[in-house]
Image (cartoon, rainbow, N blue to C red; front, top):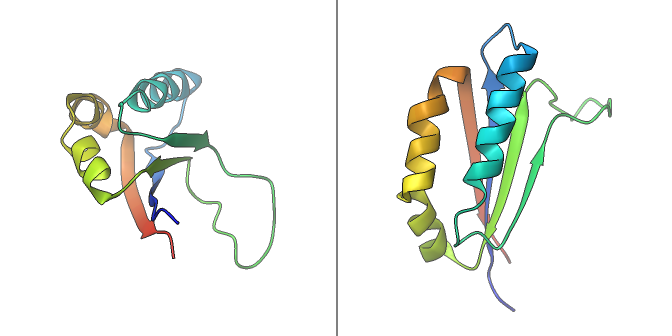
Length: 103
């Protein structure tokens, strides 16, 4: 079994989150996921589920799957990823990342 590398990022955007900011950020996310080492991706916003264990305080989530850590390392220094951070980092106040590998 392949040990996939999963990179899950949660973004908390600065308030107020206007419709224009949402459009800008969503367009940037859709460009970001074009990096060639990404196997699969999911872009999302909090679901309307309500349970004590759910944290829905974030604005957006980005879930990326890579074949391995080395492919994820390429993504980390890829010009598209660096451009995303440089051009849109002003939009978020907090980012949390969870990386995992298949067991």
